[in-house]
Figure 1 (cartoon, one colour):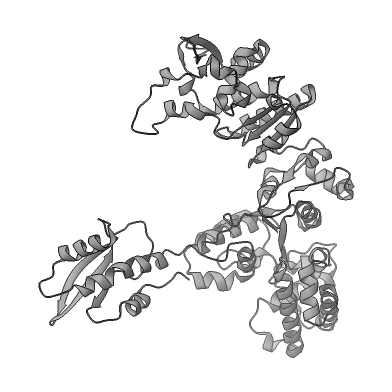
Figure 2 (tube, one colour):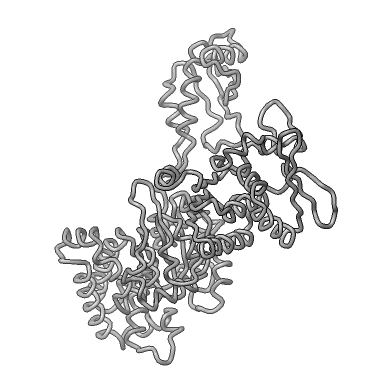
Length: 567
């Protein structure tokens, strides 16, 4: 982009600030080689360097701009004095420029090289936006070293500069603090980049932006929604309790949600699912939803968000339906008929479900009975005792098959009811004090084994796996390769007079590595020589050590037998 603009307009009017804006100053702040440099010796550069200040892409160019333009200096210096309690001095010494600071309350000068990197970054960007020579400013990661409040301040200054001076300022950022929507058109200032995809920028006249719900949502959007703009996939869930449980399951199962570029976002009620889904899909984000059972039973508002996706149509066709909606409506018709038939003779079953226990006065009884009976259908194991049990089994199979298709396109339903219906250690019949109940649940969940967690929180886990990286980090394969490169050699030289020192020497000679990851101990069992091998690392997480192997045994088979890949 820098090179593009420099071809279009005069090169000196285009300024690019790299993310490593400290540049050569870093050598005076941190040890980068065998030499030590004093911060007091830091020099911005010579007068010859100053002549090409427009080409310099670090803070040095901005210090030269402040020296060259008194108005730029005043603009920056006044802000440093009033807002940050700093005085800044630019001095030429023996043909080189140096920069010093003085704190208002100490009156003791010190080199810029020991000032906080965040403040130095602020100076660099402020000088660039105030420099009238600069018409196009490109800043890579303006948030570098800045706390959230300082990012917010800097964004305000940038917006003012665009408005007052007519500059074009382009920011490349990973910070939600630099996403601010004063009106709906601000959304069109964003360009979304994703690897191997065409960048997306929304036309301010796009019909999607004209809807009142979307406008209102954008203007009151919180930070957690903004995180979704940096994600590849977004998983929408219904509330704080769901988020607590999801985060605990992610940690327990070691799911790589974050590395997959996925963001979990709790919405303000399922009524927000359509508008939030529309927003993220506009900018090419893949959206998945984890909804309570009523989000599926009551209406098709959530299902409709997925039925027209190309993959959904393909899956429906493969099952003999024109689209998923046909199968949904057919299944729901059967559910309604079955519930009406048994509404009176199954009260003892559905009236103990949280949907019924917590129903409101104006809730229709048939609607709540449908929710509660389907929730019980997936919660209870005694369906054989239900009236017309074969019909209930049939409808259960239809629902499972239908939801399996929906899950492949990102629509997940909590078949037992709400997330609380999956609780094994907390009260799962009340919807009051939800976060407290969730906190209690995860305190016990963390103590359970993986099989228990997968079985009892299966619907939640399925949604999380959908937005996670399928593969797990598995160090066992690398350890196997490392051990194979040594163990066959060690066994090959094993004789009655062989010492452990001989083994390490042979490994070092063959591999050119002085330190082995393994500890070898020679053993003799009734004249049968072998090795006891242990792992000499406190950070590698691999099971199977120590292992014992005897001369003549198959090394590959033994290693595969005792060192198991991570499940």
